[in-house]
Length: 62
Image 1 (spheres, rainbow, N blue to C red):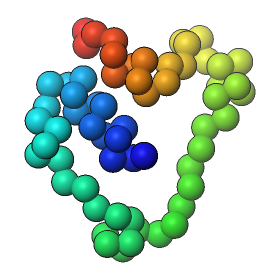
Image 2: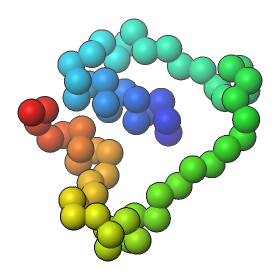
Image 3: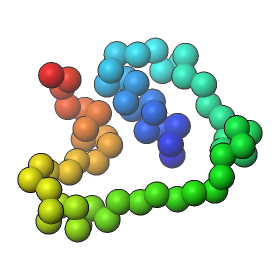
Image 4: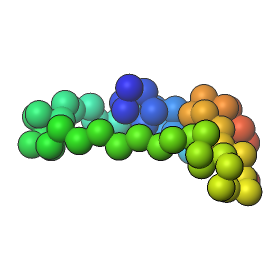
């Protein structure tokens, strides 16, 4: 899932997706950590509309 997000952002930025390395968290010694955003709560606090990754990646870069 994180690799897919990286690819979406790279495509949006005009980068070569094929050049992105992929690795598992275990292979780089990363701890098993989960970070999540409660988007319902965030939408109530933020002035900007939160968009999903696909919607963000599909929008034009300014």
